[in-house]
Amino acid sequence: MEPTTASPSGVTRTCAKCSQVKPLEEFAKRDKQSRRSTCIPCHNEIRRTRGDHTRRREREAPGTGRWRALKDRYGLTREQYGALAAAQDGACAMCRKVPGSVRPLVVDHCHTTGVIRGLLCVYCNVALGMYENHHRAAAKYLATYGDGNPLLTQ
Image 1 (cartoon, helix red, strand yellow):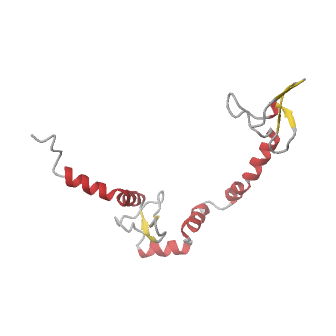
Image 2 (tube, rainbow, N blue to C red; image 1 turned 30 degrees about the vertical axis):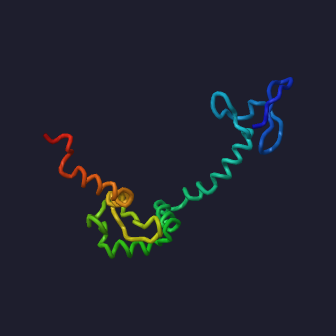
Image 3 (cartoon, one colour; image 1 turned 180 degrees about the vertical axis):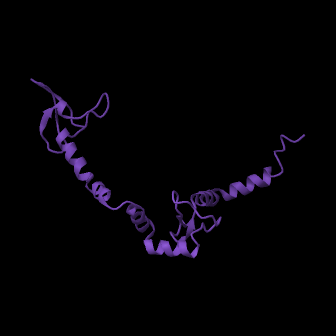
């Protein structure tokens, strides 16, 4: 961070973006003790340019963000998702329950290979993820304590 220097009008700082020396009051507070390294106008300009893509997405039709995310993450189009859902009769591939409109089926995929396996309800997807990560520990636990904890049997 640029050190501050005293001036006749008070403390000044050099903006990291525009390189102008400005009074410290022209730099927004980061917290109680420190201020940003860019002046307020430069910081606002940075935020405006960062927000361009956000505003563009807000103008899109509602619900399109989900389809963009599926395409970006898995290379899956809306039509391919629809075909998978139709092949599963709109139900979770694991528990066979049809989800409500609030929580649609999610894409289950292998985290190692990226291969899409099917569509699952949120609960089965979480359970499967837990199983994949902890199945050995769970099997060992059940083998040890499946008949009850030996410390509690009398």
